[in-house]
Image (tube, rainbow, N blue to C red):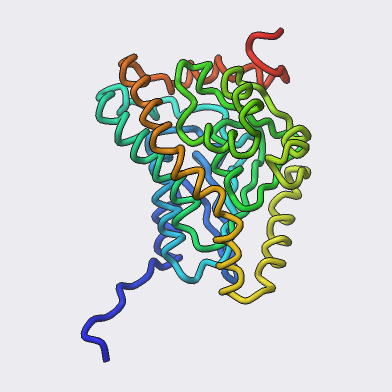
Length: 286
C-alpha cells in the first residue's frame, strides 16, 4: 500500500452548486452540458464571469467522470452586452485588473479550453455575440441560424489580441482575419459555415439535441480512443496558442493600460454592437 493517498477529484454535485450563478451544469452518462448565463439569460460580460469560465473549465477537466463537454450560451444571444456594474473593479484599479482580469484570467480561459480538457468538446453558438472564440475553439461547433459572429474590440478602442485574434487567424486565414478584426465584420451563420468557422447551422431549439446526438456517437468508442483522438484534433489549436496568445495579450494590455480608462462598460459596448442587431455588416457602411 502506498504511503500516500490520491487527492480526491472534484465532485459534480459540489461544483454544480459552486458555479450555479454562472453556468447551468447537467451531466448524464459522462456528457456534461455547461450553459453560461447571467441571471438565467444571455451572458453579460463581467470581471466575475470572465474569471469563472477558466475556473469551471479547469474543474471539469479535473473530474475523471466527465467524458465530453458541451459548452453553450443561454437565451437569444451568445454575448451582446456587459453587466452594468461588471467592470467597477477595473475602473477602481486599472493597472491591477488589466493584469488580473485581462492578461491572467483571459489567458487561462483560452489555454484551459485547449490544454486542460482531455475530453472532446462541442461548442454551441446559440445566437449573435462577441467573444465567440470560446465556442469556435471547441473541437466541434454548432451554430444557430440567427447567430452572427463578430469582434468588437477595435470599435471600442481595444487591440483585438485576447484570443479572438488567434481564433480568427486560425480559422479564417490572414486576409479574412485582418478584415474581420479591423472592421468588426458581422459574419452570418451561413458565411461562418462556408468559411469553416462552424460545422453545422441549425434552428436554435435543435442545437442541444444535435450536440447530444454527436456526443452519443463520440461516446461509442472506448475512453482511451476518445481522449487520444482529442489530442490529435486539438494539436493545431495548441500550437497556435503557444505561438500567439501571451504576446497578443501583452500588446492588448499595453494599449489598455496606456489609455487608463475602462472600455468594457455597457454603454460603450451597446452603442458599438447596434449594427449587428440592425443586420448591417459593420459600423461604417450604412
